[in-house]
Length: 366
Ligand code: NAD
Image (cartoon, rainbow, N blue to C red; front, side):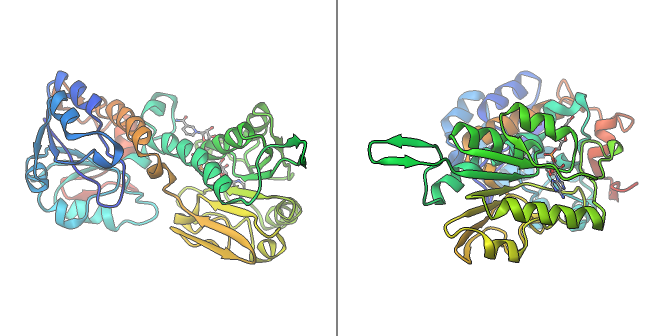
């Protein structure tokens, strides 16, 4: 199959790095890459050429791609240039918006959405959400430390003592646990909170304190995802978070609910009571945010608190993020690309869940 790689319009990452180009060619495929596709992630054209890719213009790459993997979904102008019945692979998030899926279906393309890959052990090595979330959790702490007008670690010096920064992590999933680990490494005192009972042990194993609010609904049938909570629980949670938030120097929020807006955990009133100079990094900003005041893709200062809304922090570590993304993509491709030929088995659980459109039909939700 001819596999295309193109320059992301709004992202520094690239979906396929030169190392994967070589492997895909060894497996019987041909690679057509847009010139400069890996430049912003520090993968030079020469490395793509050395790996065996044909470097061409964007239009030529699109026109020849029978399969194309991208970090963000292609826009309609790009999609229209693909051969009919091409396979497009990206994160379409059909549960947040069906428009992109409708676009690919209207063009008779077959679309796989990486965020729809089921959370089963077999699919762990394909889980783009987890690899990118882990980078985001790390980067959130680094950015917070950069904005905080204080030290993170405790210091005892001849000029006096500095207490450690207090970091509160809301949502202890993949991103949250990496934030906990990074904040601990920087020497801060870390507390973390989650509605899933399983998170307690994980937080404690990283040396942080788990903030408990009793009575959370924790649905084992939700496939590792959190579920919405009762009003009674939410009220108890708000009170507990208020107590913790006013003490914190940094709050990293990562709480998500699959297919729904992110829960509001930090209210305007809490921000008003936080210490001047404190920092909130809201990783959930693209789905509404966990902080009532955060604005997606913006850094603002409200009531003396710096609030950073950014759900694409992995794009700020483009070299390693692209490397991990590529590895996930390779493992995913292997489920339906055998010796350079497409073998799409709709009975396969991973394919069935992630194939959201085929032959003009939207398959998501069916
Ligand atoms: P996510 O991005 O959907 O949510 C982030 C965290 O926010 C979760 O831990 C969630 O419980 C928490 N959260 C949601 N509502 C909250 C609220 N009101 N208050 C506080 N916290 C709230 O989840 P994620 O980080 O991608 O993954 C969650 C878990 O799923 C992981 O810890 C892992 O155990 C599991 N997982 C399994 C696989 C797999 O088996 N393939 C892959 C990825 C994750």
